[in-house]
Image (tube, rainbow, N blue to C red; front, side, top):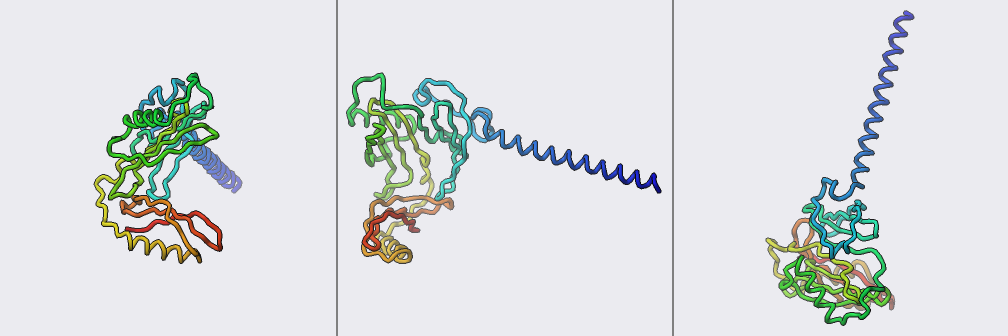
Length: 259
């Protein structure tokens, strides 16, 4: 009987050791997965690294590290965000590995160029830069914003569809001395091979007002912007940004109207 008990105890002890080993392996696998997310881009199997031109990297060579994955709340498209030691950010499409945008880290209030460029000259620089990334002749210039604190000019473009601005957009950020600081064009050609429905503006406004009535007791509103969008199911909608007056107070809001 004593020998039998000893054999049972040895068996249970072996089971215990095997369990500890399996738990250790599981933890190690999890650790490797989390570590892989932080590998440099050229070692990450999720995306294929494109060549970053010296114009983008500013002739600085540094290791690019994974930061996070972002998901567009309308299209469900994923993008991978990477950073370098200068604080620059690089945005790649999760599905194709192509560069969708970047933003350079650093101080841009000073430059080796002593004279500031005019707005027209900066616009020409933005056009010239974009030609390497989009078919610029199919996009419309939609506006310019200047940030007085950072001294950065942002030039905005989008593809018009049926006379509406669309979510196929691009922008370039340029310092007052002509340095390209940032760029983004995450939705290039998303409307290709998509049947665009007829847009009944009166019905669209009626649907907008109905949605606002369900949310507010508003006295008046003003439409600021309409943008044709495409959801994850490849269905078109109109994103409408408005200013609403509720209890004598103005506030901004946005609504998506199905088409």
